[in-house]
Length: 204
View 1 (spheres, helix red, strand yellow):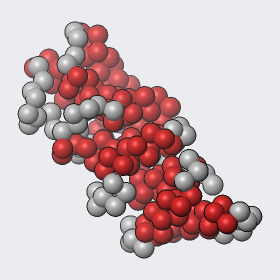
View 2 (cartoon, one colour; view 1 turned 135 degrees about the vertical axis):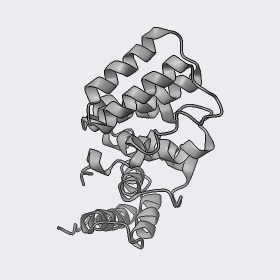
View 3 (tube, helix red, strand yellow; view 1 turned 120 degrees about the vertical axis):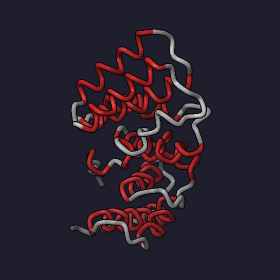
View 4 (cartoon, rainbow, N blue to C red; view 1 turned 90 degrees about the horizontal axis):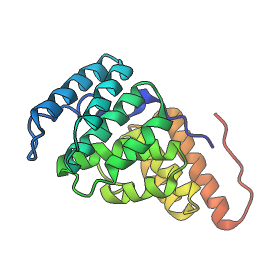
């Protein structure tokens, strides 16, 4: 099984959930806020190189607070995802997910990005840890994240949980035909793994 994660399927993280720089409980300095705003405009225009350039200025201008670094990591992940570059996005998405004091309203958006990015890099243990932070039944999960969660459990060897979450997700109405088939194959393969029998795969 191969999970085809595409940048267009990454949640509304890139635009919507990054539009939060003016209402945080821990305000940014004016210069950092300006760079974040400029980077966001670049991301919205698919100018990922411009966004990275602005964010690099943030990193070298002065020492950042942990809170500022959290958002810098999120913006850098978004910038690289705009270029469909999961390899370079992964360290930043995962660093943001590891931040110990993620604002409550940003926990789900942060993990919605970190989970599929981590799975794309075969960091299944991290994807599972991020899943546990939000819960695999969280109503904020979208289809690509659900598929990523199922893959993380399957490829980590937790076939029982992979089967369980896949069966629950298949019952939802937000999956494409291919995603439903992928999850059905996880259910089938997990059953076979649990019973030590060769899997008979369904084909699209």
